[in-house]
Length: 246
Picture 1 (spheres, rainbow, N blue to C red):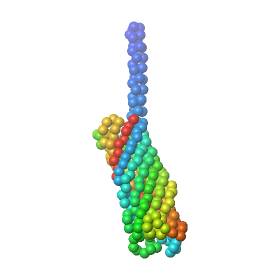
Picture 2: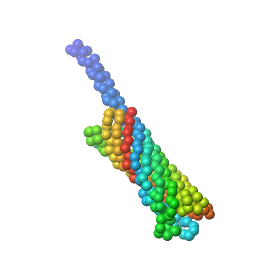
Picture 3: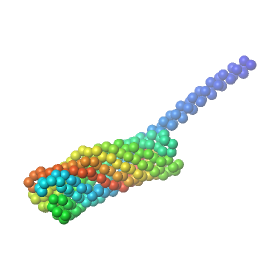
Picture 4: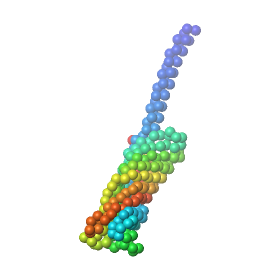
């Protein structure tokens, strides 16, 4: 009887030690899987909306507006983020910090200042550029295969610059200029899908709707400052990119 008990105690201790080591290994593996840092880069085509800026402009005085039809532009950016793992069942959240840039020119002869009547202005030139610094929350929908759809939202700061001229020869003394820059609140919606090439490399494509709220700027004519106009600036972009998981 004593011999059997002597043998059982060491075996039980060994089993407990093995179980503890196995549990530690599992927890470590799960933690590594849950928190996976990554970097990504993307580029694509961005299209600004037909923006209307309104405000008090003189002459002729009172509330006026400047409406421009902006063209498409090259859009590019990068992000640094962390995958948080499958903490919500089949949905895996991740968070990231994004920096991106877009610049779009105003369409030739497609700018209208309401103070000059219904016709478009002449000698239109310039455009709007915008840099974003956003924090994004994205949700990956696990499918069990290499394709993973995702949706997301983002919010942060937009650094917007406008340099639009019309009227006289571009840059000449008779030109009217809407020229200013500012830092404003921005938000975006994201929807796309990724394809896992390997454990570390994923290709992705997505669409993003971004809106900059309350951008304003000064309007100058040959006589100097003639008013201030403001409005939201929005755009839609379609992007492709690559994400590298560490």
